[in-house]
Amino acid sequence: MSELLSTLMFGLMMVALVLGLSCIVMTFISTKSGKEALQERIEYGFLGVSCLVVALLMVYAML
Image (cartoon, rainbow, N blue to C red; front, side):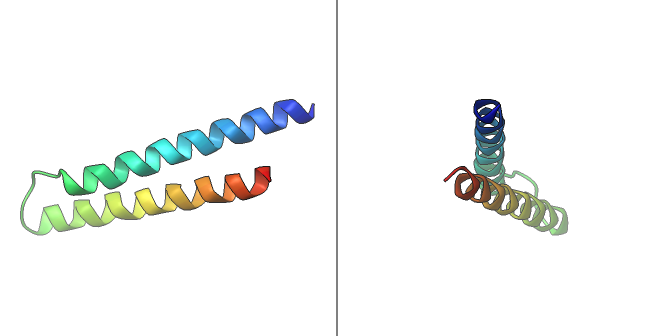
């Protein structure tokens, strides 16, 4: 049962890490301009940083 929990935590960590990194990349490759672009960049940046924090928490939980 312990292995199942560790596997699920690792999977969640990897999903959060990939989602966080892809959102941060999307922040920089946005093609919109003006107020809409700023709002999109802030949203993607916030989601990216939040996912990276979740990934780091999962790393800490696995230790």
